[in-house]
Amino acid sequence: MALRLLLLLALAGPAAAQGPPQEVLFPGQTGAELRASLRAAYRPSVVTGDNDDLYSIIDRTTVDGKDGVVGVYTGYFVPFDCDPSCDPSQDVFNDGAGINQEHTWPKSLLAGVAEDDLHNIFPTQVGVNADRANLRFAEIPDEETDRWYRGAPPYTQTSPPPLGERDLYSELLTGVSFEPREGHEGNVARALFYVYTVHDPQTNGAFPFDTAQQETLLRWHALDPVDQTEYDRTFRVAPFQQDKPNPFVLDSTLIRRAYPDLVPTAAEDERPAAAALAAFPNPFRDGTAVRLTLAAPGPAHVAVYDALGRRVALLHDGPLPAGPTALDVPGDDLPPGLYALRVHTGELTLSLRLVRVR
Image 1 (cartoon, rainbow, N blue to C red):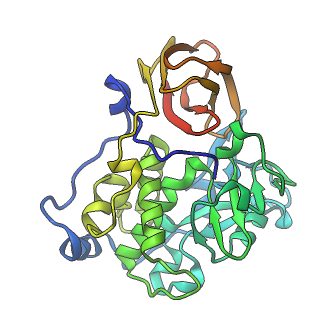
Image 2 (tube, rainbow, N blue to C red):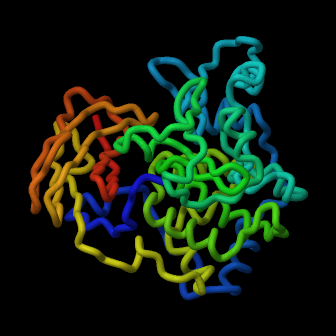
């Protein structure tokens, strides 16, 4: 876990309102009543997708003109190249050196239809999948992290990466817990609450979906909200599951309403004035103006990253005064797509999604 304060980002104007459409499902319902309604409406009785569908349709993407699949924990891209086979699952598996499927809620703790539910399955580098195993998800303090995961093989290291890059790494506390990279934390939260609600699996010591883990996931849900990529993905999964998307992707209020006893999190309910980050316009075409406000002077690393976690623009790296600072993100050199603007200081990390349009 990078040195991150759990902040409610003070976003200004239209920048705060961007994102895929959201709706309120079963308005007025909460708790057990809402959970029952979600199970009745969104639990598939039949699922028809398989590994090949996961790779060739659901998570297929294009990078540098090549089609392939990206591992969600590391950002590692494996192209479809018919080596060692043109079968999609064998093609990206690469004889164990590439990508396989991971059940976010461990498969060994599921039964029946839930085992093959694609809302719970994501492409993952084979070695990272094995290391995560059935471990619970948690925030891991940097000083306790045993392994950091990112990129192409060897993809893992035991020494901490530079402070400004830590949120791009997944983390392991051996035998205890696993923390996804920041850009996938909300997806993990929404997948797990979906399985827990819709399939109502049994829990045990191998994967204790207890209050502590639920509170962490609620915080990740708030800090990493649904983006267009996740929204589109749930509708690519739906045709294989009786046209049932993941409702927790459609309605950002569901976790709080379905589980009202979860304690408030700093991300949702505390409003410290340590920093604020905004960008306008957003989405943008020619460029966007960033406004970063710090409560105290200090060093700051400000950069823009693409959807694969690659840094595409460095806006500032050095000291900044207290108060507002204006920075510009030029649009000319950025292809249309989704980007992350990240600010790292010695005490906190801020993140804001940017969208470049044609």
